[in-house]
Structures are given as structure tokens and as C-alpha cells.
Amino acid sequence: MLVIFDSLFFPNLTLQAGDDKKVGHLWRLKGARERLRLVKADLMEEGSFDAAIMGCQGVFHTASPVLGHPCCDPKAEILQPAIDGTLNVLRSCKKTPSLRRVVFTSSSSTVRAREGLVPSVPLDESSWSSTELCEKLEIWYVLSKTLAERAAWEFCEAHKIDLVTVLPSFVIGPSLPPVLCSTASDVLGLLRGETEKFQWHGRMGYVHIDDVALSHILVYENENAEGRYLCSSTVLDNDELAAILSARYPALSIPKRFEKIDRPYYELNVSKLTGLGMKFRSIEEMFDDYVEYLTEKGHLSSVIV
Ligand SMILES: NC(=O)c1ccc[n+]([C@@H]2O[C@H](COP(=O)([O-])OP(=O)(O)OC[C@H]3O[C@@H](n4cnc5c(N)ncnc54)[C@H](OP(=O)(O)O)[C@@H]3O)[C@@H](O)[C@H]2O)c1
Image 1 (tube, rainbow, N blue to C red):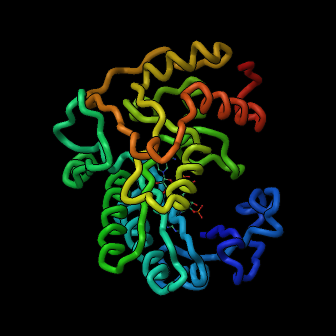
Image 2 (tube, protein in one colour; image 1 turned 180 degrees about the horizontal axis):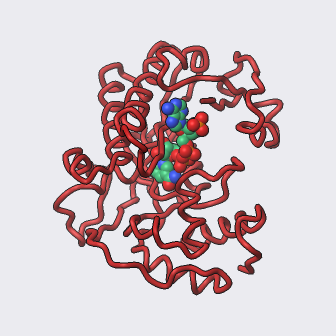
């Protein structure tokens, strides 16, 4: 895996071109030749991040496996890279005297998979998903994010590392890499009329990809930021989402309804992040941007928004 750094924070790293298929789009970003450094590192390799992190003030730890359904061994495929990988990165942070803050990308799924949700009380950052429930339901990704964030808090408290975590809901918006990540392809499926993947998603919060990036910068730069930050614009049932999208993009064959599945109602309280000045883009803005991007890239036939 490759870590991306800004030379403002990481002036001493050697420039490595890497695999063009994987990182070519990064080198084509404005200012990349002057400000970008790519360093090869592996979450599962002890000490792999030492050289990359040495001399840094800020570390944004985002890498984690995002597989809806592991092929055979969830522990090896999802849990270990998420948890051990996080601890591996944090061990490198611990060796770095210049470090100011670590921002860790968690997930809103770490607050909502639990018993006893009260529909009238929006979930906030004090809530944690139940690891027992995750295991019972075999929701390995949710379990991996919950255990990884918990491990990060324990490690950073024990070693006095300034940690802030961002908990995005389902991320929507244009991708930089040419290959769509798994959640982006699920949304493409929905826009093409498939129900299978979105059936399973049920009720979900949504957030614009640029707002997720901005939130990471906001909590890094704001001295007063502390703890966990839910990062989400709107929570919708999948049939509410489909109704909004099919009315907005009539040229697409978006499913009109989904089979009702038994999922608890919840809302997310994001006042902690909006209290730092964050303003979230609407569901219409995030999908307009995503549909425009997919159309431009040829994933969707021409759509007028
Ligand atoms: N997409 C969402 O809706 C959403 C919502 C909430 C939170 N998040 C979080 O956001 C982060 C990025 O997710 P994404 O949706 O953008 O998915 P993604 O494109 O699949 O990104 C995951 C990244 O983690 C790296 N990674 C995975 N397994 C690894 C391993 N064993 N060793 C080294 N690197 C590994 C991948 O590197 P390679 O490409 O080299 O494999 C990739 O760069 C994740 O932490 C995810 O949990 C995503």
C-alpha cells in the first residue's frame, strides 16, 4: 500500500513514482510534483511506516479494508489489517517526537450497530456499536472499524498521543482513482437499477466526499478539537433515497422501492462537528456531483441534472 504525504509536513522523504496504474492520478494533481511524496508501506509489516512518519507533525490514518463480504477468513481479511494495521501506524507515531496530532478515519457504523436504539434520541459520539452484536450478525467491516477505533483510543491514551477520530457515514461523490471503491460501485449499481446491494444497506447516513476531507482538515487544524466526530449530512431509508434520486434523475432506471427489512430507526447528531464550523452539503448536491462524475467517466449514459 502507498501512503500519501504533503511535503509541507514531510519535507525529508524520498520521492518514489510507484505503480502508475495505482498512483498515476495522484501525480496528475495540481502541485503534486512539488508537494506530494509517495512512500511504500504495508499495514501488516511492523515498522513499515517509521520512515514515512518520522519528522511529521500530522498523520491521517485512513487505510483499512472495506470489504462487504470477505471471501473466507474475516479475521485475516478484515479484522487483522484494520486493528493490527492501526496499532502498527500508531507505534510509528509514538517514535516521532515532532508529532502533533493523529486523525483517524473511523466510521459512523461504530456508533449505530447496537441494541436499544431510541428513535427519538439521535445517536452521538458517546455511543459505541456492540461487538457481540456485530459478531452475531457477522458484520465484519463494522466490527473491524469498532475494534480498530477502540484499539487506537487505548493505545493513544496509554502513550499520550493526541488522537482525534472522524466517523463518516456512507461517502458519496467523485473519486480520484480510476477504479471505483466498493461503496462507490454499490451506488453505481443503484443508479443503474440494481436493488441487490442497496437492499442490504437499509437505513444509512450520507455525506459528500469533499465534506469528509474537509472534516479531517478541520479537526487537525482546530486546537480545541478532541475525541470523536460524527460526519454525516442526512440519514435516509433506502426507499426514501431511491424516491429522491428517481425524481431528480428520471433518465436513470433507479429502483422505485426496496423490500422492507427489519432495521431500527435512528438519526445522527452531528452538532459536535457543526460546532467547529462544518456545513454539510445536501443529499442532492452530493449525488449531482457523483452522477456528473460517473457520466463524464462513461459509467452512466448521459444524464441532465
Ligand atoms: N466509503 C465509505 O462510505 C466510508 C464510510 C465511512 C468510513 N470509511 C472509511 O474510509 C476509509 C477509506 O475507505 P474507502 O471507502 O475510500 O475504501 P478504499 O478505496 O477501499 O480505501 C481503503 C484503503 O485502505 C487500504 N488498505 C486496505 N487493506 C489494506 C492492507 N491490508 N494493507 C494496506 N492497505 C490496505 C487500501 O489500499 P490498497 O488500495 O493499496 O489496497 C485503500 O487505499 C476506510 O478507513 C473506511 O473504513 C469509508
